[in-house]
Length: 246
Picture 1 (cartoon, rainbow, N blue to C red):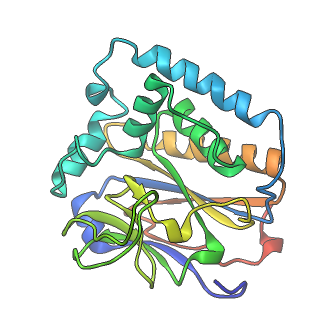
Picture 2 (cartoon, rainbow, N blue to C red):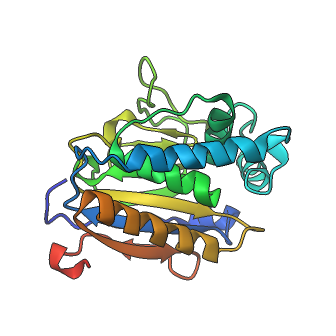
Picture 3 (cartoon, rainbow, N blue to C red):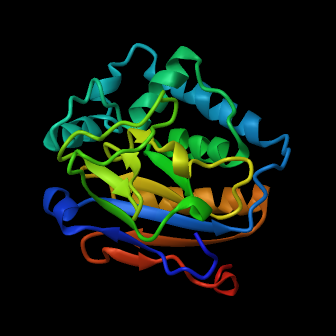
C-alpha cells in the first residue's frame, strides 16, 4: 500500500444487518520497530497466559461470558462454532494447554491484551493491504491463503470476513488471518483490531484498544491513533498523515 493511498475501514451494510450492536475498536500504529528485543514483552504475556490458564481450569470454555457470544455469532452466520473458533476461544484453549509461544513483538503485545481483556484481537500490516478494509460477508468464492495453510482456500459462503480490494484478510470474522497481510518483523505500520458483541459492554473494547495502543508505543515506538466503529460510525479514514498521530 502506498504511503499516500487513501484507506478506510468500513462496516458494510450486510454485516451491520446481522450484527447492528457490534463494536470494532481499532488502533492505527505507524513507525513502530517490530524487530526490537524488549525483555519486558514476553514476561508480560506469560503473566496473562498463567492468569488465563488458572481462570479456565475446570471451566467449560465454550460457556464463558467472553466466548459464548462469539459461538452464537458464528452460528448466526452459518458456521460450526466448534470447528471455526473465535480468536479469544482459541487463545484461551492455547493458554490452557500451554501452547502459546512468542511470535513477534506486535503479536505478543496484542495477545497480551486479548488475554488481559478477554476480547478477540488481531492485526494487519498496512503496507500489504490493498484499498479499504471492509467487514462484510463472504460470497464463498474468494481465494486466500490462511496462516499455516498449505494453499489457497475459500471462506464459507455467508461468513463474516475482513477483506480488501485483493481478497480476504481474515476469515470467519476473527477465526483465521490471511498470510498475505500478517504482521511480521518487518512491519512498521499496522492496524490493530479489537471486537466486542453484546452482552459485553461496548466500552470494554475502547478500554482494551487504549491499553494496546499505549503498550505498542511504549515498547515499539512510533505513533498511534485510536478509533471506534459501530452502526452509528461505520467508516473511519485511516490514511491520515503521520503528523496527525500522537
